[in-house]
Length: 214
Image (cartoon, rainbow, N blue to C red):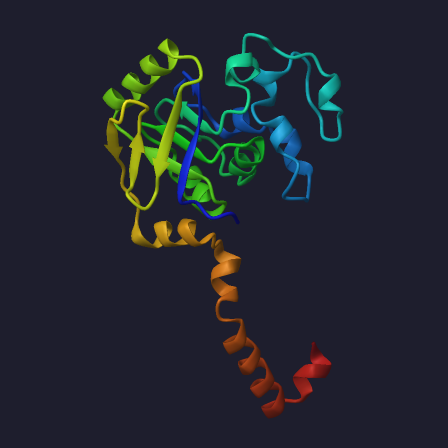
């Protein structure tokens, strides 16, 4: 996955609490066995006026002009600002896939559902918990300033406003290390590929019958 160090991006405000994973990526899209291609269907039932199905040409579908992601001022947004308990509901990993593949690098909210929160880190998406008071402030600033951007400095663990105001956030050392180095669980394992390969070769010498069994 891509490394995350310092990211500056346009902010899109999703002013809703308790957004569940079925809203982020509806259940019919879970039939896909691929891990790619979910971005066009993020928030599908809110973005489009018809019912989406896997394999549809989304460029031909009618858009809901009132939904925030479809508004011209928020095109190209890469930071999602939202309310408490984001990502609640079922534990589908497709939800962070869809958000990341839409183009988001970070999500800011007062709280997240636990499983969604953990799945974000596994897929290179940074969930940032800030207080409700700070989130309110960011919503107000975003509304007042078209083109509003924030900077997320992961090494310093800070969200930085355009006027220089800084807001610190917490992250475990292990999760921070993984994001800074672009390592998912597979990447972490592959750091030891020489040791794994040497073990497998030694095991086959000691138990040659395993080669035929496998």
